Image 1 (cartoon, rainbow, N blue to C red):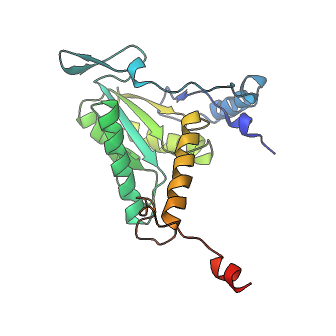
Image 2: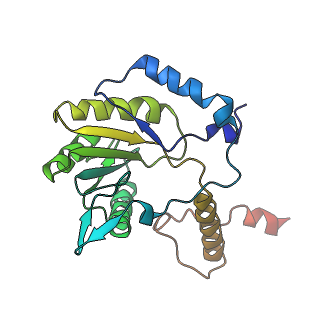
Length: 219
């Protein structure tokens, strides 16, 4: 069985060409199995927007190794047949855009809904991006990350020669996700106790409730 620590991966996976090389993918996964990535660091450093953002004369400017004014960011999730789920990505992208200050940020769904990765890629270029950063809104690396998203992004890039792109790692093992999960657990328990409304994820579904209570009362 794969250990949790073995899922720790570097923060970015650059794709330098518009075609996905099968050998390169095998090489990438081989490196992830090496001792270097078998042990996660004792404390994963948190991302700091200050390290990559800069403002000059009231405007956005490019900072070395950070996102600049000519970069477009695409946040891509799986996509759903449920409209409400897809709309939540739009809300997250709006939150991300406001907090990060990045000028070009677009949502995309890998499948089942629009906008597609191709649509979002085109919008980034229309808005002036000469480099596109595709950031998967996924927890851990899997087939969608190492195969589907790279193939779809490569196909989108064919329509925009001269525009480079990179596909970042998924969210992975990050200590802030512990806080997010703990906050979600506490909120759901508060809702069950009648002290909080349903969160945005559960609103209207009536899924956040205590199951098995009737059986306990009968016994």
